Length: 307
Image 1 (tube, rainbow, N blue to C red):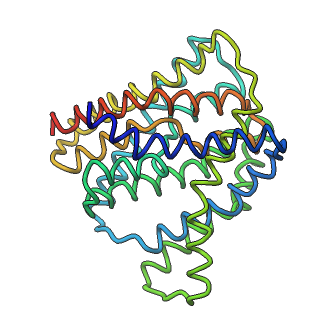
Image 2: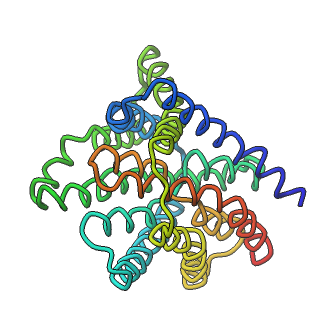
């Protein structure tokens, strides 16, 4: 019970405070959600990815292990989501939004503090979380946007559109400048860190505003299915992969816990930007975050018990 309350106080409560602020601001001022989405996609997320990759320090072997785990996890979750979507007769752009809500999880403003709390700021455990976070953002702002655009604009146009995204160049510059140990001038470094620090707050304010705009409906079976796959299916699939790779100790714990995070806030942001069922995406993020109070606590307990 004490562990549950600590996780709620240190992780869940700050998230919901920012959601509530966004909710209130939209009710009072009717915020422009399209503008908020653009600020996220074209400004704060590229800055966040650049800073995290530029500052990251981890071995090639660790990166390879986490990359293999991540790719297999996302692929199996995609297969599960598409199978369930077909059985539920979810089609078109709604199916894409549904699949994205299962594959993309909140490894940043939720996963990082959970990792920090569980492993007491252990640098090895945090390096695993940073790699997962980076891969999630790269994948979300490449395939995630491509899949949404391809539904309306066609695959070729969607692929070409990705090369206009600043996230790609933020990722490449962060990795290369890190690898070549290129120093960044102080004014640019300070500005970049300010931008990166703004990501979590702006993303949650945007989500809160989306929630304020939503009209909740009864019988949200698509949302319930997504939440089940994300919060329960994710850790189950992760456990199978961890067993297959014969991982143990802190790496196994960190990867299992990372897989249990609720749906990514940024999946709702890009759904808003590309007008692909944004209400469905926002409701999935909200409800999965609420439900994760129980499921993440349970996953942390199981991870420590098993590994």
